[in-house]
Length: 535
Image 1 (tube, rainbow, N blue to C red):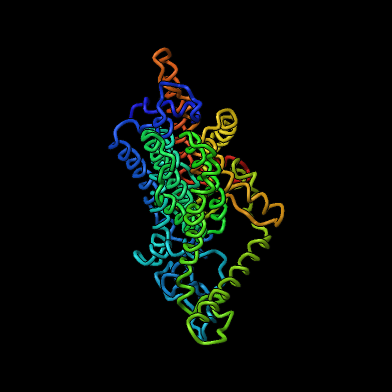
Image 2 (image 1 turned 135 degrees about the vertical axis):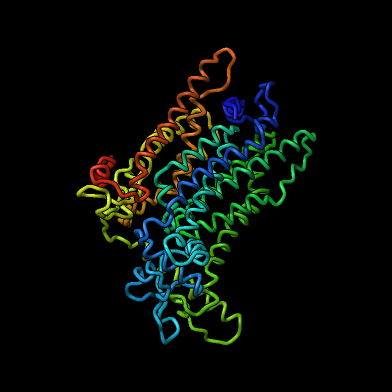
């Protein structure tokens, strides 16, 4: 993994159209810069980084043997979903029963729908949590298992995506390593909440679109080298864009905020298409995008996510036990009326959920505002107890849902740098990172102002991969390109980047006892509280 991987011209300059007279770089190299280094290391490096992150997440995964924060909702709803197809009501003391190994926690009801549970998030994330419970049982390890799996896979995906964006195996591995060392990602990868699943599907969708971008530009390079026939290149069915639609549908089927990414990424990928057409010399590139790219993009990035979202409710449609399932009673017999009445009942349920989300104003001890999230001003205490097993009079046993400070504060600086870089160069990477961050962050300001909605810092989880991509792009600028006339410049830049990654590792290690539920003296716990608002 030589640092010279990062020296390709495509990173230094934004792509230009046919007016670009630079003879040193061919159109193909501007459209699709060659991937440097060994293909083996391109996979092995990210896999090793993901294995390191996976070890951190699976080690003591069942600790604490307790119901942590909102696991009290999602662990039980997930168990009901895989058992009955829908969420169900539980007997009093269900958490204690599960922790004691007793899975008989559902209420016994005499009539259809009497035990239906009103839930306000779609079921995709709960299906995944329930998968771990099916394999390992309804216990802390079981309901946290798939969160750890997808958290680990997200490290691999980010490393590969960063490598593709920077054409550097070294920086790709750095991105994966930083994600593995982020404390918020670590905590949510070890907790049965929905936000890690939302982040995973958003990141996977973005990664698919980055691959699709390279595939499309390869076709344009082939078309140009074939003499630019008038009919234009055939872009095909674009399966990576279809895969992105499925991923973003699953994100929305986990939490509704995934829908913001659908809108943002549709715009982003169409602008990428226009840029490719312009760079290849096609006249009226935006008109060509509307005529040739928009119809299939609408199918793959709008229709497919809607269908995926509906499919996640399969358990609700095929049973009669879901909340609101029979709101619209069939007025006539026959399958057509059954489908229509079922959809009407489902739409009414979605309207009720929308009313809940826009009207959620109940105060909470750990609530925070969106502007506080990047500054880590009010994290959530997922778990805290005071056992007597640390050899001192006062002990702490905690899980604090915060980010790794050095990563988040560097990320804030890097995002500001990305704004300046994009304004100066219109580089697509800076624009994509900023759009991905904004799509997950800015809508919450509207909810804070218009609805005064209760919010928590871990809602920022989908922002973290884009924050780390901003850091990695900034690291590339610090390292600079390999220049024989200035060899020390590259060495110094690489040393600065290496020192930053090492500090992130040290910072994560310092926080580890209070994010991984280790029993430590109270004074040691208190020393790790960066701000008074962390307590």
